[in-house]
Structures are given as structure tokens and as C-alpha cells.
Amino acid sequence: MYKDILVQVDNAKSVAHRRNAAVAIAEKFNAHVTGLYVIEPVQLPAYAEVAIGADLLEQSHREYERLASEAGDAFRAAMDRAGIANEWRTVEGLTSARIIDHGHYSDLLVLGQGNPDDPNDISEGLVDDVVLGVGRPVLVVPYVGMRETIGKRILLAWNGTRESVRALHDAMGLLKSADKVIVMAVNPPGDEREHIAGSDISLHLARHDVTAVVNSTVSKDIEVGDTLLSRAADEDVDLIVMGAYGHSRFRELVLGGVTRHLLKHMTVPVLMSH
Image 1 (cartoon, rainbow, N blue to C red):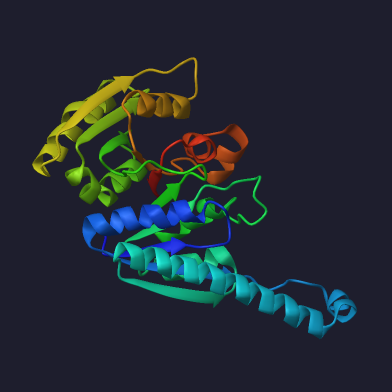
Image 2 (tube, one colour):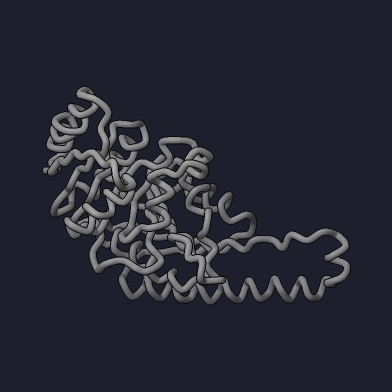
């Protein structure tokens, strides 16, 4: 159950989609939503600080505070319109570190997919750090937006790893309230893992009052991530649940991986756990 939701807020065009996702989840679970805006300190060498001057640095900081206040007004207005209990926080420091600090005391974090075409979007690379460091589930919202619903039709990416087990149980509240759950196992390695991917997971979910349709497929010609996205489109899914970074982040960066592929090409919100 999600009772305490943390939303990362900035001045990106897509921040409204994060607010909408938080409202949708909060309404479902009667949750409290906290908006967090991080002002990063200006990192300059000493000679540059002298050249720029203290007045200009102070002016820059005041501009960041103005932007934070503007974002806070929009956040509170959106939550109040929806009747969601909320809190606004403005803090200073490194964005990923501060989100992780505050995320430790939350049930769910809502972050955005990075938009390389928006100069005000600071999400690029942020999800990686937070997912690996916070120890809580992270809902990543596409910068192009989301559907009116979230969690009515869920695709659970399953391979029996620790990360996918964590994601399954982190999303149990959503799975129990979904109209349809599709469990998707791609390239299950061997008879034993096929058994786990099928009958065992179905039985476990059924004991939690979740009726799931289990599919297993072998994908040789396209990326596993593309297979998941294709099935999500076919099933009209509005949420994907998956374990994040089953391999090291370095390996995924160099060789590619499902996590990085989904973060780059997501079409619906993705709930990730590590």
C-alpha cells in the first residue's frame, strides 16, 4: 500500500505528467503526496567566482528560488484541486542524493523520463541513480505523457530474479486493484525457470487475489525491451512493472539492457525496483 508518495519536481514541460501520475496513485490509495524541488549549488572554481562576483551569484540563486516557488505553486494547486493531502519541500544539494535521502521515508517515488529536447528537464540519468540507491519502488512517467488511467491493465515483466521479485511485491497493491494483469516472461532459460515463470507465479499471485494471464516467449530477432513494449501496446497496458538493472549499470551502459531500453523508449509509465 502506498500512503506516502514523493514526486520529483522541476520546471520541465513534462512535470505536469508526474503530478497527474501522483494524483492517480494517491486517489487509489488515499495517500499523502510530497513535492520535492532540489536547488543545486553553483559549482565554480575560485577564479571564476572572483570574475563573476558575489552579486551575480546571489542573483542567480534568487532566480533558482523563484523557479522553485513557481513550481511549488503549480504543485500545490494541482494537489488541492484533486483533494490530495500534500506537502511542498525545497532543499539544496545534489539532486539525486537529496531525492534518495527524502525517498527513504516514502512508499513510492515518482520521477520523469528524461527529455533531451527540454533544457529545463534535469531527469536524464537521474532515474538510474535513484533506482539503484533509494531502496524503494520508483514510478517513471514518460515525458510525452500518460493515459487517463494508471494500473488498470498491468504488464509484469518476470524472470524470477531478485529484482523482479522485489518489483512484484512492491507493486502488489496495484496488481490487486488492476482489472487485468499480464505476466510476461521473455527468453526463460530452461525448464526449471519456465516452471517458475508460469505456474508458480500464477499460484502466488492467486493467493493474493490477483488473477493473472501468464505468457512466455522467446525473442531472438528484436530486443527484449521491444518485446515488452510491443506486448504492452497489444494488450492496451497502462503500466509496466519490472525489476531494474539485473546486470550492473556499467554492463547495461556498454552492452545495452532491458532497463536502459525501457527508460529510453517507454510509452507508458514503468514501475521499477532494484
